[in-house]
Image (cartoon, rainbow, N blue to C red; front, side, top):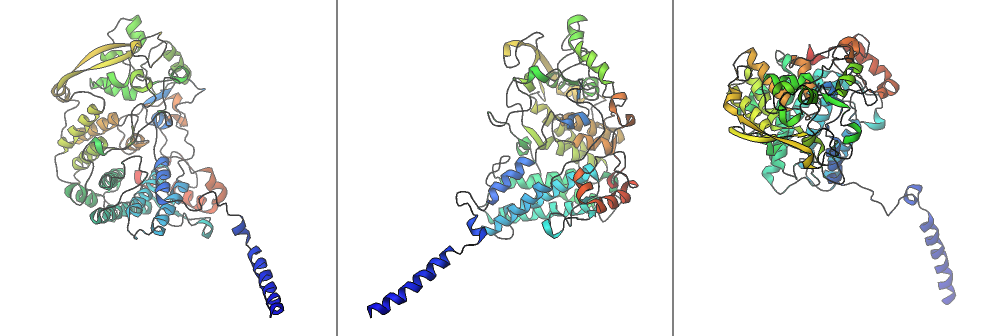
Length: 526
């Protein structure tokens, strides 16, 4: 019996040892020291960090707020290259949704709801920049490496549908209760605030389609009226506390302008007359918060530093050599050093905000899309902008800080001259150039005030508004490039020419006569 036992055990041991060594390459290549799945919350956080359009970028140049005067750093030309490519970010949105359900969440959950908003946001942003884009066949991976281009109209229709569904789904999740969005750097996981963001962006996208209200299948007017007329079903931002904004923190995420980089680039840009000229024409107190007086006028010509005519912007179309020379002679205003260069965290960068919403609603009512008091929304928009700068909206005063020439650092408060600025809201609003009127001139005032409120915020939104309305008037010249024209669109990314050439060419033929023309008019502008 003992002999039989030995003979029986040996083959079994050999079989087990052989089986244990037969591992696949995939099994052997797994690193057990790193995670093999990413939770939805981490993917969500990554998408949020891919979203912001920060200040001190070319967006400010294209919106004629703030201009390069030294060609080593950049120029003010409208020779647009490729637009933004958010497809990798959108892949992470899909993965976020998949990981949420894989973790046991129901089909409709907080990540799927905000995922629909992200789809609407990123696809619409790309389309607003370039026109037709791949959408319905995009994000398929190896299943489809050459997606067709969807028409801009279809992209916009789908984005509006996603926003409607996102509001419905987020409402259901909130009603069920107990859910949050972990890793939320914007709104701390507050689903009610995300619902407001969704509907506020819905209003923005509808205003982008202001030239297409006659097309009933888009439903611009009906959707706008439904949102404005039913705040219970479609809550929107109620104050600046609801802003979707990126807050800078030290030492990991500095504001683009800091005391450390002031010496390198603080004089390489100066203010634009499109922005400063509008402020001073309206005798607007924001002049003293966002800008500083032209030192030549103050120091050499002895003008008051708090006189509106002491603030001068450069013409965006000016030859760069001329602008550089004038800037060196201190003939222009520069951005306010106290507000934008004295700390490492600056001000939060608003991506979608309450003040803009107020102006968008005022615009829609002025155009007849819904009933309501356009003037009330208009006033709320201006006052929200004032408040963001610490400017009183009654009678009162605030302190203006202007950097003293020859000072050694922007962080030291002793290097600023201070001035008391008196404010009388009623007098400001009572000006014929500011007070709302229910006519075409009133619409122009809404758009001008929106432009002033979006200084340094909301990416290309001011450029998009100018492109569809012509307000405020942008200037052109030798420094504009592009035949002294404001470009109408961005080109497609180079990757489309190399990896999706046939569909790329078909899209160009359908829209712009076969050319990737930066002056071509996309569907929403016709």
